[in-house]
Amino acid sequence: MKKSIKVYTNDPKNEKLTLELFGLVKTFVTVKPSKVFLKGLVGENLSETVSIIPGENEDFKILQVNALKGADYKHSLKEVEIEGKKAYELTVENTRQTEGRYFDKIFLITDRTDQAPISIIVSGYIERVPTPNAEEKEMKAVPEENEPEPAGE
Image 1 (tube, rainbow, N blue to C red):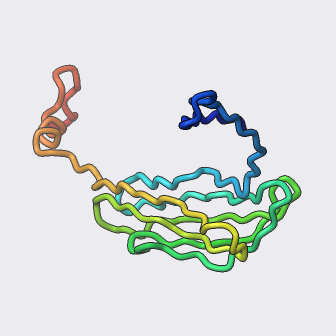
Image 2 (cartoon, rainbow, N blue to C red):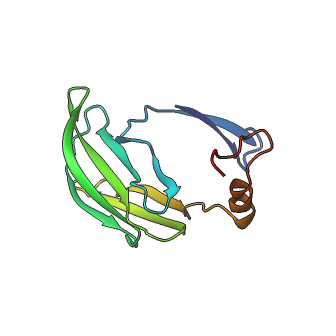
């Protein structure tokens, strides 16, 4: 990473300075996908699995999984191995049985006190199962012009 900062001073010889900062940013964790979006019809089984992969030379243990609300879904966590490293899979399953939307956030608390909890946004969009409207029902009841009449009538 490289960033530049302009510094203004009251020194007449150096009224404006440019400082350049260089640094290596280490990835603590990779979360794939970073957000969960559950979309479907009422009654459908909707779920998504999120991989939580520690960064290089970053070990941690997930101690707790807390949802802000947790009303419209359930979640489960299991330890797995991904690319030869200890990792986790968080499965989020919709439990909402009515149409509508929901938004929530899951927090993963680790044993690393030097890091903030890992947060994952969860949203759902559950639609009503479509039913044929009256016009479609009526059209199905009337035979099409090219359709032959049933025999024997």
